[in-house]
Amino acid sequence: MPAAGKLTHALVARPRAGKLTRALAALARGSKPTLARSALVLTAIAAFLFAASPAMAWTSDPWLDRVHRFEPGTSAGFGADQLPFIVLGPPQGAGALQGSLDVVSLGNGGAIEVRFADNAVVDGPGDDLVIFENAFHSGDASGPMFTEYAFVEVSRDGRNWLAFPDDPVTGEGLAGREPVYANTGNAMDPLSAEAGGDRFDIGALGLDFVIAIRITDAGSLIDDLGNHSYPGTKGGFDLDAAAALHSTPLARVRGVVMQGDAAAAGVPVRVRGVSETFWRRRKTRADGSYAFRHLLPQGDYVIRAGRRGDVQQESQVFLGLDQMKAEVDFNLP
Image (cartoon, rainbow, N blue to C red; front, side):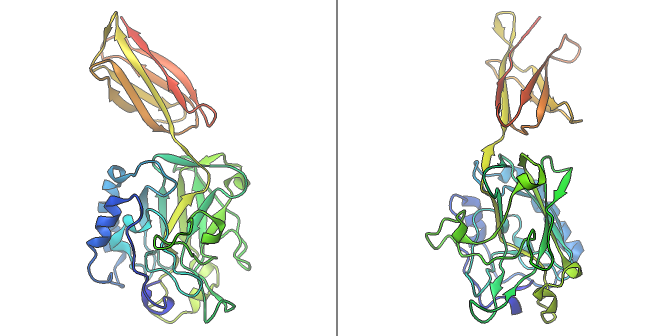
């Protein structure tokens, strides 16, 4: 939802720790975002920003790295011109009685797909993933919760999705249930239970890891309090941040290509998962070495080395959560 109506007052957004680019973007903010934007304009802005987002991935940490897709719903707009940075890094919670303005409003029925680029959420004891919205109690701490629920899906590869089962009466399994207390201005650990947010166990879906989250505003499918707000404040689910409670860096393959007794520089090397249809490509360095990082721990990978028209060599390795690194050397004729 837009700021008016739902939010008591604006929480000043502070630079998020360790995110220099995010801090610069915050300093560059001018006036409050325009609340009424067409879906066409929002989608164009999103496409421009997200196309560049792979180069904006931060060093490995538990927080989101990029926004892959934003599909604004009715009344979306608030925070959209600050994507993707506004949802990267720790939350800017405002406590039990007010919601943060450091959010993007999905709009009624809108959706956002976010990803981890250098790490994966892994199944561990208890909950594995936390999503921060800006729900708050109306009136006082015993008052009804102002909620704008969203459905949550997760994926191992960004193509195949599983949804968390939900209870529309209790809100269990939905995002947007709990207030957020942690922000970069207090000393609260944003991953602690006391920090607030909504937690999910990927093991309950039979998954060992995920790299992508899709959050879809429930709209009229669930009768939350946000649906009964007055016109101009029905901006739907508001995403502040999301993080892995259990996390691991992604897998990697490296090696050296030789030709006889000499290092083979500039030799094409390719790798792909046996279930994938695309190749990742590199050329060997001056010392014959190569490296592929950020590979999913999803099973067998094929690696090929050699120039087109010449004899190529192929090898196969397994990458899983219990084997995240592999070394494959080649000696070409």
